[in-house]
Amino acid sequence: MSVKKAILPVAGFGTRLLPASKSIPKEMITVVDRPAIDYVVQEAVEAGIDTIVLVNHPAKQAIENYFDRNAELESLLEKKNKTQLLDEIRSIVPAHVTVVAVRQSAPLGLGHAVLCAEKVIGDAPFAVLLPDVLVDSQTENNLTQMIAQFAANECSQIMVEDVAPERVDQYGIVKLSEENGVQSNQIVELVEKPAVGQAPSTLAVVGRYVFTPQIFKYLKETTTDKSGEIQLTDAMAKLLNEQKIQSFTLQGDTFDCGSKIGYLKAVAHYALQRDELKDTFRAYLKSIL
Ligand code: G1P
Image (cartoon, rainbow, N blue to C red):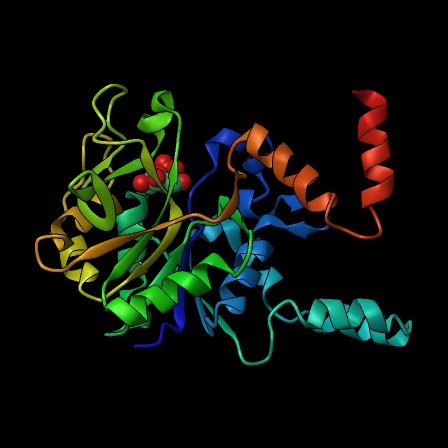
């Protein structure tokens, strides 16, 4: 079963990045010279995804426009012979990739956002990438590896990362099965944002998922929780009664661009990878520290 479609839920208001996110979608805030969401789309495309489904809000059309052609800008760049820039903006979405958008009709949380894309996904496996989280894989693209693990074991995959015990209340937390003291990658329990001290482990769900289409059935059965949201984690916990779900341990770095410190770290991290910037930027950082 190859995984070709991915859902990117982008309808959230991004209250953690106010006031900037009042008029700029948080996904469009720049990391070096590209909007944060561009990194996530490139990651998906690199992993073989050819259909990106944005689950969007009417006020955040800037995201859709970014992935659309801009004929006026293209002809201006053509006239001015700015071929490199022209190539750059034309390759934001490679020719074999389609970006479509559906709307999330009500602010009912991540689970509801995923369900909004059901008609576009159909009866096929799919990935979910949370656009707040940038993943810089250490070796092979982690999503590529998750998709390979999905194909080999025919069950859903969830990326996890160990977090400090005092941060468990910010994440979905998974518990893995253990035999004779050895942990496997089979998930046995999932809980959304448990209170500190009450989590079954410190393994946090960090925003990359590969699902069998059966998850939709459980999303439809899931009701809103005390925060008024339909949680993807709750639907996954139900799916666990029917199918196996495996964890995939992050190999690399994640940056939570929905938070100020995560965003600042992402800018520094990606700037230091750029040939044209890294020496001057490193020297500058040294001079101010
Ligand atoms: C969402 C999910 C949570 C996950 C987190 C990762 O929460 O509900 O399970 O651990 O993303 O970033 P949010 O950060 O949207 O509150």
